[in-house]
Amino acid sequence: MRSNPDDTSDLRPLSELGLTARGGADPLISGLSVDSRGVSEGTLFAALPGSLVHGAKFIPAALEQGAVAILTDAAGARIAAKPLEESHAALVIAEDPRQALAYASALWFGAQPQTMVAVTGTNGKTSVATFVRQIWCALGHAAVNLGTTGIEGAWSHPLAHTTPEPITLHRALAKAAEAGVTHAAMEASSHGLDQCRLDGVQLAAAGFTNFTQDHLDYHETFEAYFAAKAGLFRRVLPEDGVAVINMNDPRGAEMRAVAAARGQEVISIGRGLGDISLTGQRFDDTGQDLRFNWHDRPFQVRLNLIGGFQAENVLLACGLVIAGGEDPAAVFDTLPQLTTVRGRMQHAATRDNGASVFVDYAHTPDAVATAIKALRPHVLGRLIAIIGAGGDRDATKRPLMGQAGQDNADVVIVTDDNPRSEDPAVIRAAVKGGAPDALEVGDRAEAILRGVDMLGTGDVLLICGKGHESGQVVGSDVLPFDDVEQASMAVSVLDGKAI
Ligand SMILES: CC(=O)N[C@H]1[C@@H](OP(=O)(O)OP(=O)(O)OC[C@H]2O[C@@H](n3ccc(=O)[nH]c3=O)[C@H](O)[C@@H]2O)O[C@H](CO)[C@@H](O)[C@@H]1O[C@H](C)C(=O)N[C@@H](C)C(=O)N[C@H](CCC(=O)O)C(=O)O
Ligand SMILES: Nc1ncnc2c1ncn2[C@@H]1O[C@H](COP(=O)(O)OP(=O)(O)OP(=O)(O)O)[C@@H](O)[C@H]1O
Ligand SMILES: N[C@H](CCC[C@H](N)C(=O)O)C(=O)O
Ligand SMILES: [Mg+2]
Image 1 (tube, rainbow, N blue to C red):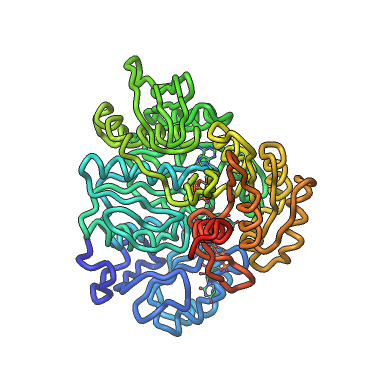
Image 2 (image 1 turned 60 degrees about the vertical axis):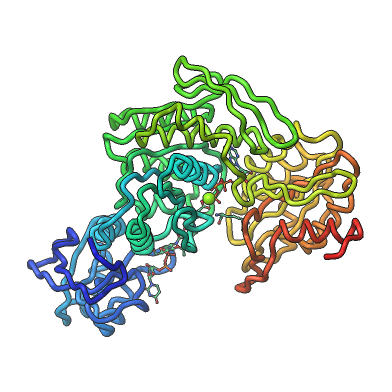
C-alpha cells in the first residue's frame, strides 16, 4: 500500500503493476496517466483507443515529456511504431488496455475501503448508493458514497464523473481508506462499465435498479447498453460476490440469470416477491410507511422520504448492506433515520397558500414519468411539471421525456437544461414534440417563476432535470444555477417576502 497516494517519489517497477513489457523491460514507474498532458519523468502513459482519437497519437508527446512505459493495444502500437522503436520506453500491449489500466491503478494505489459495493441501472444509482452509505453510517461504520454527487459521507471529495476513470477512482479510494473509511458504495455508470473504469475495485456485492432508455448516443442500441450494465455482474463482481436485483424491472430476470451463471448468490427485491418483498406502502405529507418481508419475517418501518420509487431504492440498499455482512433486523431498524438525497424528490419551498415545490433529477423518460406519478398521491390539486433535456446527450429521449410529462402531469412547462453546444430552441422543440400542449419558456429562472406563480392551494410544482446541479451549462460556460434556490426565491418574490 502507498503511504501517500500522491507521493511520486515512491518509484516501483512496472512488473509490480501486473504489467509485462515486450522483451522483459521493467522500468521504475513514478506515476500513471491517461492523458499525455499529465505525463512527467517516469510516468506510465496509457494510450487508450478513444471515441475521437486514439491516445497513441500522443505517444511521441508523452515520450518527450519523460514517459518510461507505454500501455496500449495492438492498434496503438502500430500507430506509434516508429517513435516507440526509437525510444527506450517499455511497451505493454494489452488486448483491453482500459481493463489493464484499471488493474494497474488498483495495484498502484493499493488501499481500498474493506467493504465495497456498486450499483448500476438507468435510474436510482445515486439514491441507492447514498442510502447504503446512510445505513452504514447509522450502523456505526465510516462510510462514503461515490458517484454523481461526488464522494460524500465520512470523507468528501468532488468528482467530475459518476464513475471516474481508474486513476482518479483508485487515488480517491486510497485517500478515503487512508482517512479511515472502511465502507464505500459506488455508482457504476454504463460508460464506466463499458470502459472498464471500475474493474480494479474489489466488490462484496453489486446491485441493479432498472433498465430504461438513456445514453443511446453512446451505446447506440438498447442491447449494447444492457450488455454494458450486465458487465457489472458478468465481469466486475467476483463469483463469491452477492448480486442484489430489482425483480420488478422487466430486465431483472435477465440480470439475475447473468449473476446466477457466474455462481453469485442473489438477493432479490420486489413488490410482493423476492427475498425482500414489499407488501404495503401508505403515503402521507412527509413520507410513507412500509411493510415488507425479509424471507418469511415481516417488518414495518417509517420512511421520511417522498416517492414510492424511493422505497424500491431503499430496499435495494438494504439488500446491498445485508450482502456486505450486516444483520438484516439491525439494517431495517435504521430506515427511519434515512434522509432525502440532495436533488431527488427534495422539498424546495412552500407558498403561503400551502402549495409545494419539489426538485428532482429526472432526466430520462422513465424518471420523468416515475417522479410525477410518485408525487401524485401527495397532490390534491394540479401537478405542474417543468421539463428540459440536456444538449449533447441522447437526442431520441427528448420527445419521450416530453410525452412522459404530458401523459402524467396536468400542466407541463418546457425549458432549458444544460444546452451545452446545442441550440436550446432545437432541444425544446424536440421535447415539445412529445408534449404539444406544453408551455415553452426557454429561460429556466423564468420557467420556475411562471410555474410557482401558477400554484393554487393544493397544487404542486415538480422541477425536473437538474436536481443537485449548481450550474447551467451553456456552450462551454457553466452559469451558476440552482433549482432549489430559484424555487425559494420565486416563492419569496411572489408571496411578497424579503429575499
Ligand atoms: C464518452 C466518454 O466516456 N469518453 C471518455 C473517453 O474519452 P474519449 O474516448 O472520448 O477520448 P478521446 O478524446 O477520443 O481521446 C483518446 C485518448 O487520448 C487521450 N489524450 C487526448 C488529448 C491529448 O492531448 N492527450 C491525450 O493523451 C485522452 O485522455 C484519451 O485517453 O476516455 C477518457 C479517458 O478514459 C474519458 O475521460 C472520457 O470521458 C469523458 C470526459 C466524458 O465526458 N464521459 C461522460 C460521457 C461519462 O463518462 N459519463 C458518465 C455518466 C453516465 C450517467 O449519466 O450515468 C460518467 O460515469 O460520468
Ligand atoms: N428506482 C427508480 N425507478 C425509477 N426512477 C427512479 C428511481 N430512482 C430514481 N429515479 C428517478 O431518477 C432520478 C435520478 O435518480 P438518481 O440520481 O438516483 O439516478 P442515477 O442512476 O444516479 O442517475 P445518473 O445516471 O445521472 O447517475 C430521480 O430524481 C428520479 O426521478
Ligand atoms: N449523468 C447524466 C446527467 C444528466 C443531467 C441533465 N441535467 C442533463 O444535463 O442532461 C448525463 O450526463 O446524461
Ligand atoms: Mg447518479
